[in-house]
Image: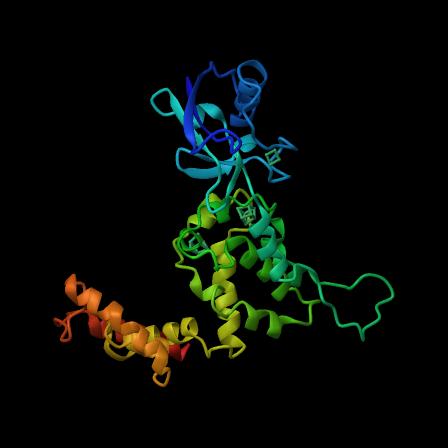
Length: 313
Ligand code: SF4
Ligand code: SF4
Ligand code: FES
C-alpha cells in the first residue's frame, strides 16, 4: 500500500509536499501502528503525535483522505482506497512539523470559556457538591470530550473566520452552562452569544461527524442556542435571525429571504443595515437575489397549520 504523507520541515522546506511510503499493512494494524512502523523502519524524520494508543488522550488526530480522525482508533485497511491513503496534518492550525500542528489558539479559545466549575460559595456542603443522576445526564455527553480537536480541524466556519470560538470550546461551554452546580449560567451564555459564539456556527454537522466520542459538538451548540433563547439573550443577530425565520414561515408558510437579513440585522441597526448593501448589490449582479414576488406554493397552508399546531403545544 502507498502511504502518501504530507511533510514539512520549516527549517528547510519552503512549502509542504507529499512523500510516498510503500508499506505492507500488518494484519489488524491501526493507522497509528502503520505510521509508527513507517517512522521506525523507513524514515525516522517523520514526525507525528501520539500517546495512549487507546483513543483516550486525543493526541493522534490527523487528516485522512480529507477528514480528521484518530489514527489509533482507525483500522488502516478501512481507509485504504485503490491501494493508497493520504495523510495530512489537521486543519485550522499552523503546522509545526510534518503532522504536528500548533494547538496554541485552540487552547486559548478553550481558556476563554472558563472551563471550570464556579459553584455558589455561600453553600458549604459537608462533602462533595451533590448532583442528581438526571442533572448529570445533561452534561454527560459534553463531558466525554477528549480534546483531540478533530472537530476544530474540520470546522468550515473556522476555516473562514478564525475569530469563531469553534466546536470544541462551545461543546465544553455547554458542559459547564448546563451543570446544575454552576452559578454562572447567565453570564456564560451571554458571553458565547456574542460575535464568534454559538450563532456563528453554520450547522454543517461536520464536527459531530468527526467526533470520536459522544461529545458531538453540533448537538451541544443546538442546546446552547435553546438555552440562550430561554434565558432571553436575544439582542443579537443570531437570535433575531432565528426569530425572523420562524415568524416568516409561521406567517406565510415560506421563507421571505428579502426580509430575513433586515430583521436579523435589526431594524434600527443603521450601520449593520448599510453593511448589507454591498452584499445585496453583489447578489443582484450575479442574479442570486431572491425574487420580490414569490410563486405560489400549493402546500404553504399545510406548513402554517403545522406551525399553529406546534405553537399550541
Ligand atoms: S456544525 Fe458548526 S461548529 Fe460544527 S463544524 Fe459545522 S460550523 Fe463548525
Ligand atoms: S468534541 Fe469530539 S472531536 Fe471535538 S475535541 Fe472533543 S472529542 Fe474531539
Ligand atoms: S494516541 Fe491517544 S487518542 Fe490516539
